[in-house]
Image (cartoon, rainbow, N blue to C red; front, top):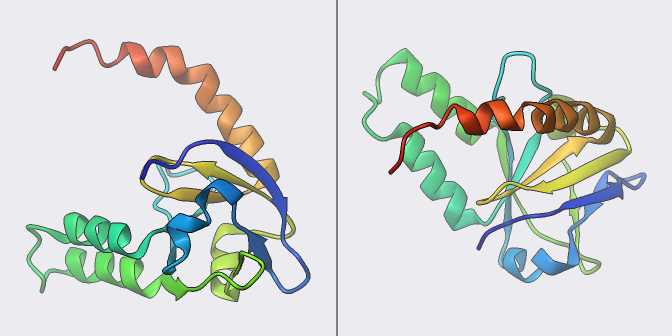
Length: 150
């Protein structure tokens, strides 16, 4: 499944996030909520919401070829597995966001959920607005940097 679109929500008092209606069936069997790697050093932190099988494939791919005893592999495993949570949607199609996840992504109440292809990303709404505007402004530069053909 490809996840796309932008949705604005508010976390409730118990830190529950409503899942976009068009993606609820995809998450019916479970959700992996994970810390997302930043694309740049100063980029805001986000969370990603994965179908469990897709997250397992993503994590395995990221670790493939690394010596499992190397410090780099061990640190990567700690982030990929230690900063991810197996969750279920409740009867109202909401996801309870754990405290460490809220802290990691600096989420308070107002959030933006965006499609990111293989997963959904959860952003602090103000951070998303700022970061997205910069990305949109840089789009011509980014697109032009791919001057080769497949």
